[in-house]
Structure formats: structure tokens, C-alpha cells
Amino acid sequence: MNLTRHAHFWLPLLLATAACTVGPIDDDAPNSSQEAVTAAESTAVSQAAATDCRAFDGDVKKCDAAGCGYYFCSEQCHPKNTSLCDAGCTAECNASCRTHDGDLNGCNAAGCAYYSCSNRCQAKGTSLCDAGCSTECQAACRVHDGDLNGCNAAGCAYYTCSNRCYTKGTVTPCEAGCSEQCNVPERDAAFVSQSVPGRVTVGQSFQAVVTMRNTGARAWSQDKYYRLGDNARLWGLARGFLAPSETVWPGYSKSFVLNLTAPSAPGAYDFQWRMVKDGMDAGWFGQSSAKTSIQVVPERDAAFVSQSVPTQVRPGQLFEVLVTMRNTGGLTWTQADGYMLGTSSTTWSFQRAPLNLGESTPPGGTKTFNVELIAPTKVGYHSFQWRMLRNGGTWFGASTPALSIQVVSSATSCTCKPGYACPSNCPTP
Image (cartoon, rainbow, N blue to C red):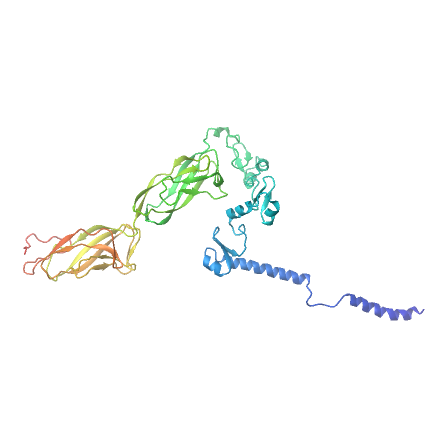
């Protein structure tokens, strides 16, 4: 056989066959780089959607209009079908997870964490302690004995007096080896400070802040039903709450921000709060906050201060009166809102005296109205009494004292200036 001739025959054929095994290029076939780009673009789109929705936090209507889902528990706007956990609704998320207690598969499918030691299903990141695994939790905490930072980071309670780390709320300082604290009551509280308005309008929503210090041996926590309470129940709220995950350890203070509503009737109301533990072993404990009085006033009210009015005028005379009123209500008087001094009498040519343009009288402030009037032509005594009103028809507050101004004939008249009594020798008609 001529090998050279056979090589010339087979070599081109083998090369062509090898080239054919590579296969043609298919523009429609997926490849790894294309898939990576698609995945990246998809992630960018979903992140952009989440960002777009979050722009409407706090605005339910705009959130819904944007096709997003509004979560009232967190006042946040997220893409629809966002989980309660991812939406920042911690309490609701945990409650949703707890419906799968005893169901490992259901718990995992819901994106929660299952704790076999307690057969509980809770939100991811829940500590062993909070999951009810008391033995494991205690053991996990005790490994941080002598390590304050590590103990705190693990969500445990550190007792500096004994350098021991325990599960929160499981032992008192006395039980933790702090012998000098053995005589401290389990529950006690001291009043620290408060920020309370002295004056509010009927039905007004307002905030007050009361700070209390835990001077007892037990920590305060929401799940143990520790609250700040109002036994009088005057302000639309009877309890001030800790946050779900908050703990106030012995020696530490808590500022309770109270969202309150003023009573619907004007008057002076006492404001005083105290710590309370609700639940099976309920009871009030510790010092009360300092008793203070909050003045609840109508939205619009006025008190008479003074007036300067002549006792005698001539028929048709142009004269001046000065009337000063105090704003004893909860709203500011402004010219733009239509506040004015007025009278229902048609005797004096003018029945309204508005505030000046741009002028305002805040609660507690006074306003002196300078009114120029024309005396009637009829000789005799005419009543003079004015009162505050708004928008020309809504009267409010105290009236000025009732006076009688005498209109005397020109032949027997005398001139009276505002602030001065007429001469005693003015003749009487």
C-alpha cells in the first residue's frame, strides 16, 4: 500500500470531520454569559422596583397607585407580596411564623426559623432565649461569663457585680450573686422627668414624655407586661408601652412617649402616671410622676381686659373707643381667619372691628381694638357692649361689660375724650 497516497486521501477528510464536530453557531442558543447578564438585569429591575415603591413610604394612596403594597404596621411601601418580615413588621411577622409551631416543614416553607428544642416557629434571627429554649439559652449565655460585650451581643443579661451572664429575666441580681442587691424589691421605679404641655385645646391630639428609672431587681419588658399607666384614664390612653424587643434593666431609665387626646370638656385636669405590671400578677409599683395640671381650653375663647369709652357724646359725633380682649382659647386669632370684635347693636354705625391685615393674637395674648364710631342722632341713653366673633357670625368668649352712652343735645353737650370722665358740670337733658 502506498502510505503517502493514503495519507493525502484521509488527512483532509479527518480534518473536515473534526471541524464538523464543533457544530454550527446558534444565535438563539443560550450561553452562560448571556444568562449572567439576564440575571443581573433582573436583579437590577427588582431592586429598582423596590426602590420606587419605598419612595411612597407614609403615603397609602400613592403607594397603591404605583401598584405597590402598603404595610400599615411599618408605614412602608414595598413591592406587592413582600413578606411581613421583609416589610419591617416584626410583631406581625413573628405572629405569622408562630402559626407553624409544631410544623417543621411548614415553618421552613414560610421562610421562618424552626426551633426544635421548643417546637416553635419564629422569625429568623430570633434568639434561643426568645424562642423558648430556656436550657439551651441559659447555657449559651453562661459561656459569656466575664465578657460584658459578648454577653450583651448575645442578647443576654450581664451582672457586673458577679461577672456572670444569664438569660434575660431568668434570675434576679440577688440570684445572680449580687448579694448587696438582695434587699432590692423585685419591682420598683423612680420618677425622673416629664415634658407635658400646660395648655391644650379640647379634643386636641398631643404628645407628652414621661421618664422613669427601674430601681427594682427585675428587668422591665413588653412581653412581661410592664407598662406606664394612668389610673384616671383621662387622656384617651391608659398605658404607655415598651417596644416589643425592648428591655429596661435595673438602674436604667425609659422615656415613654405618650400620644394623648385632650378631654372634650374645658377645664383643669390632673396629669399623673405610674409604672404598672399587667397580667396574672398585676399591680402598681414605684413612684408616680409629678402631678401637674393641664388646662384644657376651647378652640375659641376670649376674656375681657379693659375698655375706654366716653359716657357722653353729641348726636352724629364721630368718637373713638378702645377695647382690649385676651385670647383664652387654643387657636390664634388672625385677620385672614376672620377674627374680629363685633356688636349685635345697630346703634353705632359700625358693628365690626377686624384685626389689621397680617395681624395675629396667639393664645394668651391680648388685642386692643381701636374703633371709630358715629353717635346716633336720637338723644338719650344707648347701650354699648361688644364681643369676639369669627367670620361674621360665630360669637365666642366673654362680652365687654354693658355700658350706657348718653347722647346729649348739642346745646347742652360736653366733649369726652377716651379714657377721661366727662366734667361733673355737664348738664343733663
